[in-house]
Length: 134
Image (cartoon, rainbow, N blue to C red; front, side, top):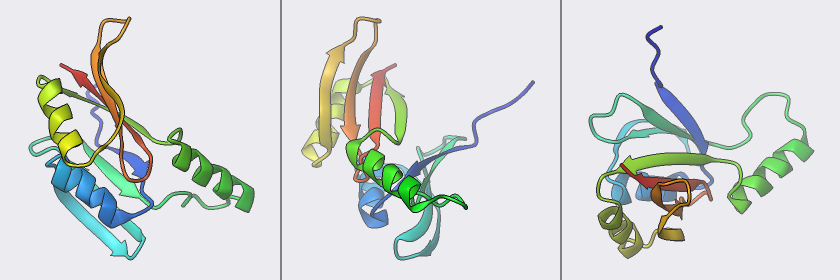
């Protein structure tokens, strides 16, 4: 089968802050920005990538109870709801740029016991952004 990842979805709690992180700090392009206010679906991607990330308002699925919406909000705030893993050949350079730009550092570049070297940031919504040295 010939199947590729077209898009993955992460929640945002502040679309403008998310744009500042993904577009301005990571340098990704905005492919779409649909909606108004906090009810926006923003598609961002590394320049030239065939895959994209859609930043969406959280808890938009139909039929969610108030308790489920509260649980999702708490998970987002705690950094355990959304997660993305990126890769770069220049881990230290990317880390330095994100840190200098005010990125929320969770973990500095570290050699992991499973062989990878990586760092972790949180985006403005609290999603973990793990970056691995390629």
